[in-house]
Amino acid sequence: MEVGLVARLRASEAWLPALSLVAEIDGEIRGHVCLTRATVAGRPALALGPIGVPPEHKGHGIGAALMHAVLGAADALDEPLVALLGHLDYYPRFGFVPGSTLAVDPGVPDWVSHFQIRTLSAYTPDLAGGFRYAEPFYEE
Image (cartoon, rainbow, N blue to C red; front, side, top):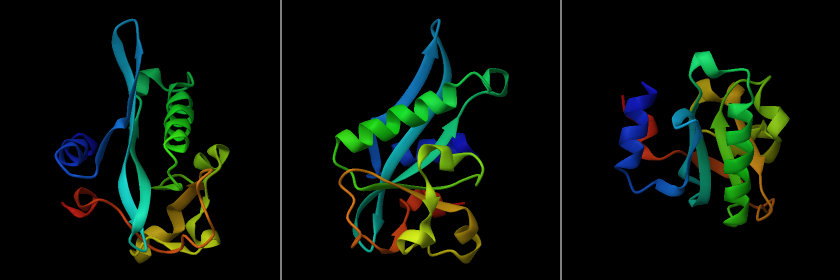
């Protein structure tokens, strides 16, 4: 499913090549993360995902390194925030908080419980309202 999503994202206007990163060790790709253009109340924001590390390489810090790198890159590009749907025990270590605490709603009721936001340096509290992923996230 995620391979298809990445292919659709790459073909869309939401794709941001500078925010698509891979972890490579000894010439082998060991992980990938991407941020794509999204909006909050029609204003630019970013969506994280997919992020992936093959099962045999998990537990070695590759995913964490990718997260730190892509968040740092987004911050350096003056992006205001990154949103994701993800595990509530994993992403807070990277500064993610429930979207509801920042008055950002994912627009899909089933997503609210796992919808999280990481603010960046360019964030201002007036960036609130409905969040919208790039269209490929809504395609089946």
